[in-house]
Length: 343
Image (cartoon, rainbow, N blue to C red; front, side):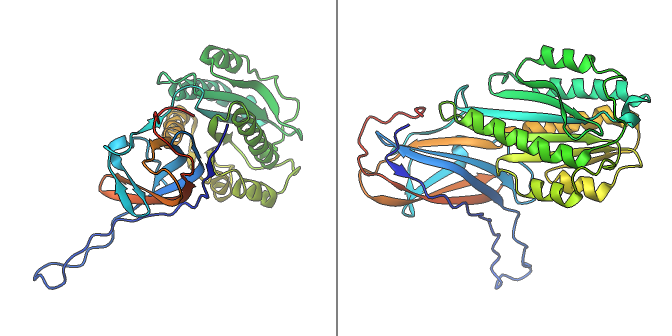
């Protein structure tokens, strides 16, 4: 891909403040409203005059923003507002431009396989697959399923695929005899899961520069017993993961270490007291995964500039709250004939 300039990315968080005139009687000072956070993941400029930004949008509390519209975006070049008459703009999300990968990492140690939990877990995993694929986006979404027990290496049940029937078939194949080690290698599974996801996203991005993001769902009903990997190492791997990778966790029953599992699931943690709650929790987590997937945006516009280096600022406003993203780009060589949608 030929680039006419490199965007030096610095994502800045913007907050909309409510201002009250202190001289007006009867009015009290209002706390600032919650802001929007825009995180720039990648950007490029290319001929004839296309500028493309790949970013994530969240509210300040971490809730993903999955429904930005193009009308919610304002563009500023060197602090000058660029109108829609001067610059076409749109979000791009067609197959071949963006891919979202999810890894289900399931605890199939002895405590899950020996009791009634296995049938409920399989039904919950099936529901998770259906909900992640609930919209017609199978060309941009894929799921892999791995499982762990007490062995050092995790096990692949199904590699990444957009075929829901294949995933359901592999889930149905899980039996009580699948594992030969009743222990739990939770920490090792987390480290290996992050490694697998980062390699997968790097591989996809290397194919025609497809932009990628992903998530990991970790399910367990117990603590790490195997001791292959320390808790600190697992925490460090999660904390130092790729910026476009989310980690969520579900813990079932009284034997889990809730603070530890919550730190692993830094983007979302759910505790389930008993089995009847498990399917609903998996469904809620699937909704969170969909929200995460839809909070990544490929934004492109046609710059009216024709030469020089410029500061680019994007303002996004949602529900009365706003956020700002700033970067720079080069317009050297830009010319007419730009069409939005070219990558």
